[in-house]
Image (cartoon, rainbow, N blue to C red; front, top):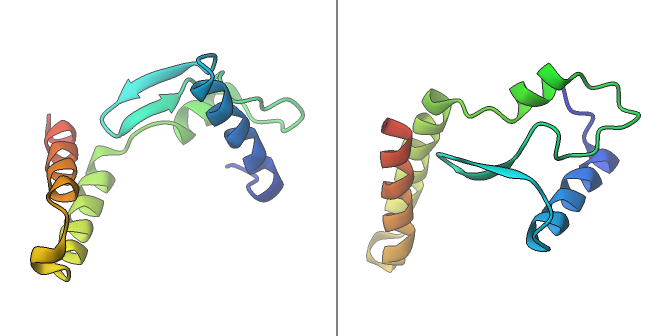
Length: 97
């Protein structure tokens, strides 16, 4: 769907624009994501519907990832910073709504 490699610089461009207060974004369960028209796709032949799909949040897939992360975090025991556990719990809560 996304050509990757060198074209990833287009995503980095959006990040710089976002940090500069210019990049368009939408708030999602996993954080701020670019709007479908925020990333320069000129010359790539990517349809707007494809960008919408690329930027969609698959809640079920993310919830599976949360479970995987929980398992990984267990390997750290009491050494895991509490804020990481807190952020993961907050992510799970947002995804579960």
